[in-house]
Image (cartoon, rainbow, N blue to C red; front, top):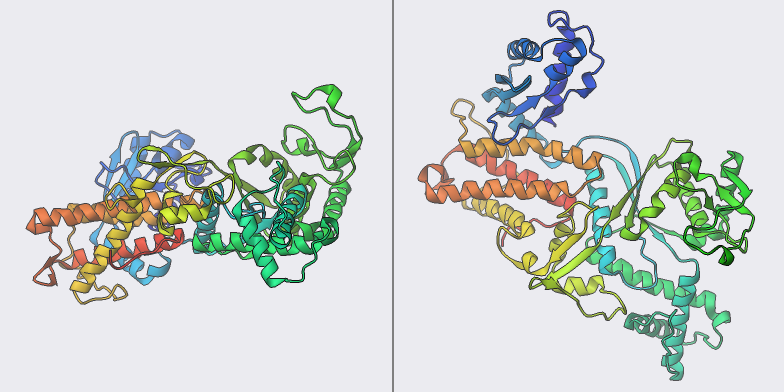
Amino acid sequence: MNIFENYLSQIIKLIKLNKDVLKLQNLDNLKNVNLEVPPAHINFDLSTNISLVLSKANKINPNNLANNIKDLLLDKITHFDKIEVAGPGFLNIKLSKEGIISNINDIFKNRDVYGSKKSNEKYNIEFVSANPTGPMHVGHCRGAIFGDVLSNLLLFNGNDVVKEYYINDYGNQIKNFVESVYLRLREIKFKEKFVAKEHLYPGNYIKDIASKIIKKNENIKINNFKDSFEKLKELSLEGSMLLIKNDLKQLGIVHDNFFSETNLVKKDLVNKAVKELQSKNYVEKGYLDPPKGELTKDWKKIKRLIFKSTTFGDDTDRALQKNDGTWTYFANDVAYHSDKINRKFNKLINILGADHTGYIKRISAAVTALSDKKVELNCKVCQLVKLYKDGKPFKMSKRAGDFISVQDLLKEVNKDSIRFMMLSRSNDVELDFDFDKVKEKTKDNPVYYVQYAYARINSIIKTLDKNLSDNIIINSESFNLNEYEKKILRKIFEWPKIVESASYKFEPHKIPFYLYELSTLFHSYWSKGNEDENFKFIEKGKIKRSESLSFIYLIAIVIKNGMKILGVSTPEKM
């Protein structure tokens, strides 16, 4: 239920039916007409640009057209009580009592899905995908939460969503990781000293993985690294992925699918994907120019398979083979995305770290080529997180090695705070995570302020001996709104617009921003009751006005739905 879509469709239908009366010949640009929330200082419920859009296309004075449309809408739409022509021709609309009550009742009827919009797309959202060489660190945390909340948002809108983790378990970094575990195993079993070399992983978690392997596999053979590699790789990756999955679980994240790069190679998917691109004439044998800034004498001109990614907007064509003829990492990624396309996803979203910005054009080009422009790939980059405590950069213990782990973060603050605050800014800008702020019980701590609003509402409901699942009956005769309730109602009506915008632009940070604003309006209304008896909700254990009760329920519905999308709890007591 979206009042903006509902009323906009009614307005456009009326315009089409009355185009001759309005002297309109050109209606081609009706798609540019919108119905929005007016600025806060304007005391109206809706605002539309329809007269501005149509007057330009039809060469009509916008104010004259606006007045004619105004008369038409007031005559035909009973939910419109008052319309004002503002500025160069905007129409500001105030809803009638009947219209307000009707929309409120619709929210109550659809409380669990209020704000959603059925989209029915099939999404694959790949996020985290940290190298399986140890536990997650703080750098992974923001992208993990962003991907999970974006998935929840799209699921709320009725889409089919698969949350996927790409296990990068192939290549030199895995060999180095397994060698690190191997040497720790020998340290434990044969008392050999572990020598920390540059390519090895020094973290204490490697010792833990090694200890668990020995505990479950007492007779494991580790006399020779080469001979024991395959079995040890399997056991080491099992141990590291358990660490990662545990970190994710504690952050409230559960993936639907884990895709192994090793299996991709074993199934020869790279060769199949490259052949497909060759069949479309997007791959050729040739030579690449030397990388910019690299000395020519250190670069070898070798003929290799090259993907013509410049055909699809990339800055340069991309090598699919290394100097020795083996596949590049990019070739493996091409095969992985080919597999996604073959699994019939029509929307792909990759959540990337701050250091992957330069990678977007090439993989986007590959998806466009493989799908014949039928599958859309969106890459969202999550910038760095900076930790602060006492106003200064905060460095935590690094048991994991040379990074701060998610476990370190969880020891400082709870899951709810981490999830909410990681979305407190747009993903494309750096985020300052202030430990002092997220522990405060004040308005300056957004997650606390929103949860406190919900807990406060539950306290009111308990005092009235009611339940938030109760049906609310509004008395239309006595229904009358005060200034605080009008502001709150407009904010509640805005919720579907926020969900739509956040979904369409893949910007889940809009959800916590909105919830904080709604909670602020509620807390202000509550405080006003402490100052002025006329605004008190409850008197002698009973609700003073039925309107107040309906608004309390509406706020609870929206907060509940919003926090569910964020994966943040809504405690009944605080």
